[in-house]
Length: 290
Image 1 (tube, rainbow, N blue to C red):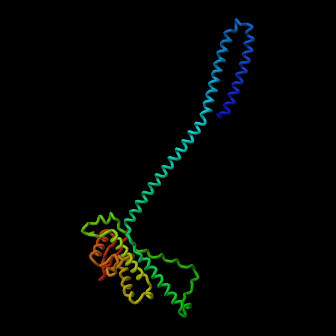
Image 2: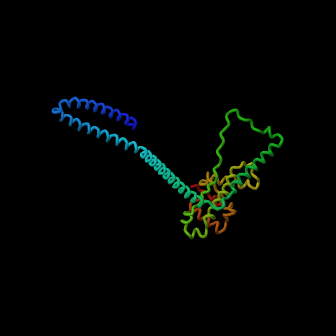
């Protein structure tokens, strides 16, 4: 019940009490005409009136106290609301900090696996191949009769383009993996050397994949024999559909055919990054995916 409504009801109650008292006073005056028989009745009525006045006064005091307590209650509610908001914000910040720490650990793990100098030769190889193709196409356009050699466009819908080749896997080694390798096998190899060798192997495999995929007419004479030989190797069991390179492709800069290079191949084979097979007189090294 609102305070104003309670005050209005109380005023009405007091007014009715005052009216009743006035009536009783008139009855008292009337009964004073017979004091011997009305003394006990008047005493009872007086006691009842005093009790009612006391109850009314208690009600007024209680309402006054409740009215005074309303501002304090509002302040307490505001304080509780602010406290809950602060608690929620602290919980949110705690969750954000935990997520940030987890992300930091992941980034640190990734950073530990990536070599200090990531090879960029894969990008250069793709760019050089595209440049050569564009130059050859422009030269053909300048030759007479080129327009007449263009095939007619089919009337139906254009065929779907084939998806591009997947890049060679660059499955870097982590510090924990390298530490798990026996010391006699690892020798003095560092994490940067191992991961740099993985980059070199991906470069060799990408170069071979481009030779295999290149049309025969666009191959230079010095690359034709090797491309045909690589295509035969690529169709062999265990090699088909995978990126590979030959032992003769190893020419640095990080992976070389020396004692360190052989140790690198041994470690990478032990960690499941590569597998080896022999096809004809070639030692074929296959890059594995995780």
